[in-house]
Each structure stands twice: as structure tokens, then as C-alpha cells.
Length: 71
Image 1 (cartoon, rainbow, N blue to C red):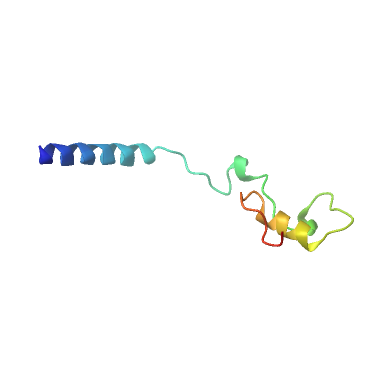
Image 2: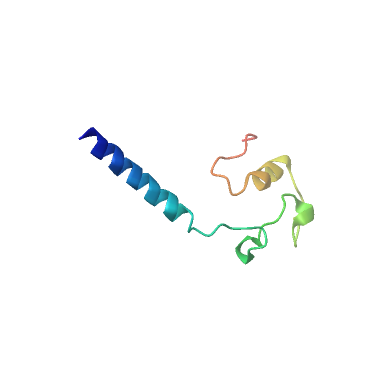
């Protein structure tokens, strides 16, 4: 019975390995990645008139789920 469990686990692992190889990977040349910009007001198309340290920390952390450490 133990060898059957090992065989089943191995089969599931192999299936995951084969499936993961078919997932397309994103590259920097991919059009979906073209909308990403560097942080900072100098890289914005319409920069704000004032820019604080909190604004900078928020812009640098986007789109992270954690808030900036300056809050």
C-alpha cells in the first residue's frame, strides 16, 4: 500500500510539472508589461505640483499590498 501512495504522489507531481511548463511566461517585451513605469514624479506624464516624502514612499511601494513604512 505504501508504494501505491508514493506512486500516486509521484504521478501528481509529474502532472504539475508538465502543466507548469505550458504556462506562458511574461517577458519585458510583452505588451502587457508595457504600461509599467519607474517610480518618481520625473517618470510621470503629468507630474503633481507638490511631491512629499509620503507621496514618494507610496509611489515606490505601488502595487504592493503593504503600506509604506512612513505612515
